[in-house]
Each structure stands twice: as structure tokens, then as C-alpha cells.
Amino acid sequence: MDKYFKISFYISLIFFGLGQMGRVFIPAQPIYFYLYEIPFVISLFLLIIRYKFAPFDKNNKISTLTILFLGWLVISFIFPFAKYSLLENGIAFLYLLRLTSYLLFFIYFTHHFKEKNKQKILQVPILIFSIWIIFSSFVQYFLYPNIGNIAYLGWDPHLMRVVGVFLEPPLSVTIYFLIFIYFASLWFSQKKWYQAVLSVAGVILLLLTYSRGGLIGFGPVLILLSLKTKKILIGILLIVSLLILIFSLSNSKVESLNLLRTTSISSRIEDYQEGFDIWQKSPISGIGYNRIRFEKSKFVDMVFLEDYNPSHGITSFHSSFLTILVSTGVLGLLVYLTILFQIARKNFYWMSIVLFLSIVSIFDNVLLHPFTLFLFPLFLVSYPVHKSA
Image (spheres, rainbow, N blue to C red):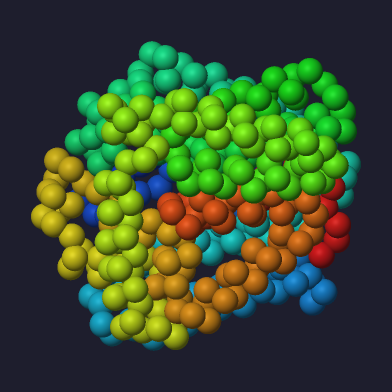
């Protein structure tokens, strides 16, 4: 069973390296999936067959809360069922199944790799994956710095920014941070030269995304690192250097490179207002996962609906937490935040990842994106420092 799981999971990781190029659309419907999700589902199926209900130990707070959250997702989907068409409910149900698969994968994957000897088998795949992501990102930055020619597919026309194969700075900055924190953590204990090189490369790419959410999230992590390693002076110098470097990189003449740009801030404020307006329709149980697209379309301009410019932003809100609030109501958000808290309190490494992702997800829907949901458990368990639940 382990052999087949490894094969299917490694195939998933290979296809994941395609990024948005591995995105598959269902014709004439707002439905898509990624190629890596096919072997990913096989991996989950194999884990379920092997462990059955073993991961749901009553002493495991994370798995218990996750099941509670999944149950509430189902309830929030059922309550407003009659308000939407059969097609709308069908599409929302498919995405609910997708999210359920990722949450179950998180439970089974972390259970499978709770033993340190198993975690070692992830080191080589993560190393190869990270090298590919870093290499392809630098190639994109130097050889394809303007992705404006694919704006007709719904992607923002980022100019002179690193987006790699993921095409969106918030997603890219998340993956670069995971690479950084993983190899930086290994370097502190193993002191291997390539770990330092890859962690530095991760930071450089993180900066070159010009993602303000990523930069804001990176500061607290540096503070935690300096406190953890008791190198406070070095931490202060790093933060000051980071601030100087950030503003030296900023370019007011190019909108996408201007860290003081206000256009995206205005759009986010408008987006948050729409979110709270929709949330007020069902503040306790929410409107159900992935029904946001049907409510949000009532607010947006026709440009979102035209074939030549299909928007990727209509399915959610900029903030992952606002998306959860609107989808599952106050109760769902409270359970979700409790899950993040329980993960973060395990150890410093897990706390750093949760802290960064949470800060970025205030500004962009990162925590709920399939890319993050796939990599989140992988990078959590890959560094053998966590305690039992």
C-alpha cells in the first residue's frame, strides 16, 4: 500500500509543478480542476483504505475539529439549498467535495507521516520540487516579465514581478515562503550549504513578488525567528534591512511595482463591503461553500461575465476568512480559527507557517486555494519537529 501511495503522491507533486498550466476547464461551465488532483484523489483513497478511522482519535483535537468543520460545511450547504437552482447547487456541491477531499487529506497525510522515519522520505521530493520552483520562477522573471498577453484568460497583467508558474503573486509568495521556512529550519539544525542557498533564494523570490501581504506576513516571522534563536540584534538588523530593501525595490512609475499603490486597496475595501453585505443574509450558518460566485455576480460589472475576460476573483473574496464567514457563518469561522490555533500551538515551525499564511489570507484568498491546501500538510510534516496531537 505504501508503494502505491508514494507513486501516486509523487505523480501529484510532479503535476503540481505545472502550476496554472495544469488547470483543466469544463467547457461552458465555471468548473475547473488541476491535473495533479487526479493522482491526489488516488493518494487520499489509498490512505483511507489503510487507516480507516484511525486518524480520528478522540484525543486528536485537530482531526476532531476538522470533522466538526466539515459537518458544519454540509449543514451550511443544505440550509439555503432551495434558494439556488439545481445547476448552482450542483456546482457548489462539486467544490464542497473538493474542499472535503483536501481537509481529509490533511488529516490522513499528517497521520501517515507522524513517525519521524517516514518523514525522511519527503526530503528528496521536496528538494527536487523546490529547485524546480525556484528555477522556473527566475526564468519567468528574467525571460517573461510581462504576462499581460494572457490577461484575456482572466489573469492580472503583472509586470516585472515574480509569479512563476502560479501566475498570482499571493500564491507565489506563499510557496516561496514555505520553501524558505523549510530549508531555513533545516539549516539551523544541519548546516548544509544547499539549505542556506535555497532558503535565501526563497526570500529573494518572495521580495520580487511585490506582494504586500507577503511582505507584511514575513516581518512577524522574522521577529519570531530572532526570538527563537535568541539572536535579537541580528533579527532587528534583518528587519531594518528588509524595510530598506522593500522601499528600494518599490517603483512608483510602474503600478505593479509601487508598494504604495492604492488601486488594489480600494478594490479590496469594496470587496470586503460586498462580503459583509452578503454575510448579513445568513450570519449564523452562511450561504454554503462556493455559492459566493452566484451572490457576488450581482455586484460586479459585465466585464466579469464576458468570454474574453473570465474573472478568477468572482468565486471568493480577497480574504480567506471573509470567504469562510460568508460561506459558513460565524460558527463556521470560529471552528476554522480554532483549527488554525491548534495547529499553530504544536511547535515553532508550524506556528510560523500558520502565522504567515493567516496574515497573507487577510488580504488574499490563500488558505482556501487548492495549491495551498495541497502543500500545507506536506510542508507541515516534512520537518520532524511536531509533537503528538
